[in-house]
Length: 295
Image 1 (cartoon, rainbow, N blue to C red):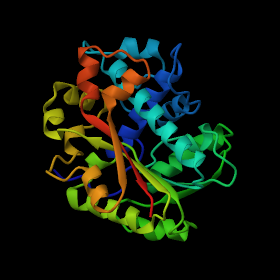
Image 2: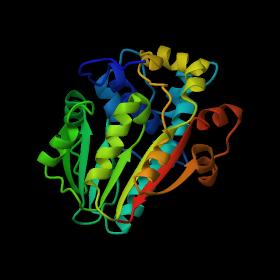
Image 3: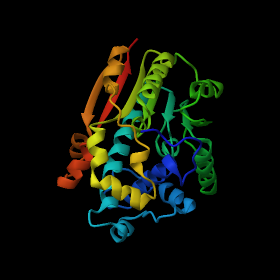
Image 4: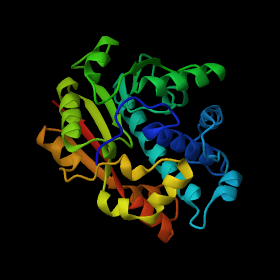
């Protein structure tokens, strides 16, 4: 499978998947017991005016849900994923890291939501049109970043590391990197290059967390993937690479990183979320990996 070429905006190709994730965070934000609270997520969805309606509250999700309750399932997964990576960043910065890079940042609002320690710089890397849309909405909302935020408008298939360096990134400094929801959209050689580049620019004390897909071929055969295509207006299967490749954790170990990983399902249970059969199937497709570089 090959990704759609060219640049996409927020309502096409991979861009609309970022919008779907924002909708999921908005739904979670309006729950009585939210794992995350994102005050900007609903504004992103409303401003984008997607071709197919996207809910921003549990009530709207219930109205739009098909017989499998896809939006409810999606928001449950994204809530757990978001909370996990929120905590990852708080752990890394709690140990002194002050340089953060969010790859394929999409509509991530962590620069505005999280309590970053003084002196933290957050770099957000993504497509120019996606970051442009995001900035327009944040400006309309009067949002103020809680750290120094720098956006890097570049395609990750291009020379993104040069753009990152040009924005002031300091190679060799302890850095917390995040690749959330990114790896399935990269072919194996691009994933290897991404991890090699991160390793190259990471100093001792650096952290990296990735969402590691599990059994992509089985996921792509799942009927719910087709439902996503219908409800989001994009064929997810045309965007995702299911080529054989080493697990990211094995690649990172080979580069000298210390690795821990946890299944998404175990993380959900740790957060007190009970998984029925449908949720268990959804959470089974990912593991969350954290790498640390000691030297």
